[in-house]
Length: 421
Image (cartoon, rainbow, N blue to C red; front, top):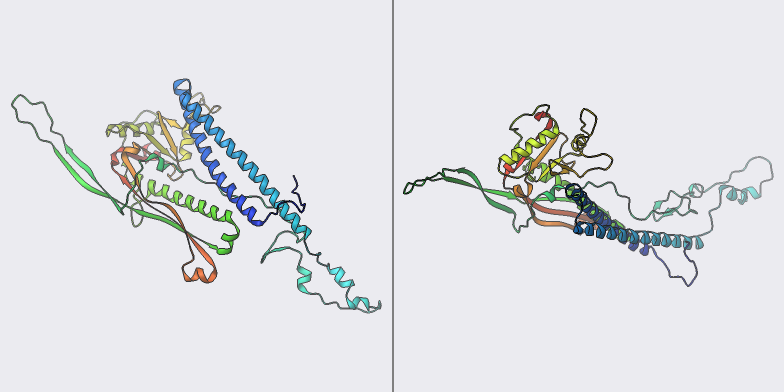
């Protein structure tokens, strides 16, 4: 639908584009969250159908509600996108109405010159041209050259096209917590000599020994900075929300790697893998496969008196397991046509690219470790330093502080498939 250019139509401004774009960004974020909920509830429904033969009414309700919410958000997004297109077309039409007369071509300037008018048809003439007149064939926006001809208004796609974002999974595996200090301390039992025994009446009771050690988990800081001009932030509200979202994603990206693989040196968190117990199979089965290795790691956790609750794999290793076939080329895990929930040995499989290919981590995660958030992600804008003030720039800082306490390293088992086979 073309926008009305009637004098009575409400005026639109570039600020309207900024406001609508900001709303679109917010709805896109909500749609992503709603899609995650749909996926999660869908996996629960699949699991119930597989294990129980039917889904519970509660799960069906959750799935229906999640789909309804996602659909409502999609409709809002479509309406806003249409409104944004309408506003941009209206502004473009108004600019065309008030556009200045077109620039004269080189030929027009030549035939209208005094030298040409007085030329008698003999000899040669020289007509000087202004260099700017000759080369001014592209439009400008402020001080920036446009890729379009000055008489043609470019079409602007609403929003900002973002690159793919990794789904973070490790934080959800662990027990959550909060702290108000820079160090989390906990007492860990490091030894138990159990001399309990059957005692005859009146006999001396045997003594057992316990040893303890004070452990600590320092709070670490993860941060990043962006630079942007004050004018850009004022003129493009969508850019502000985009930087905010990308900064948060950048911190979560590093946080996941730290919680999983951090070596604990310097400002790094000591992660789950460095803490975990090395894989040591209780026995070696015939024709051992990677699927067997995971079962032996689960057994190792169980023999340490902890029930395993999850498996962490690189997506490549999980794909290899799913593609495992028997001698008749039938898939061992799941059905490719219908798909299957990411589960192995009745435990959920968590895929993350933060774990190196050919490595695995199995454990009783919530009992093994806990995250302590000292400061949730914070976004700050500042122009206080002299360089920013002089150049009219803004420094954007994103920062979070957290600690990871691993209470029971024996409840985590890690290793490589290559070494295990």
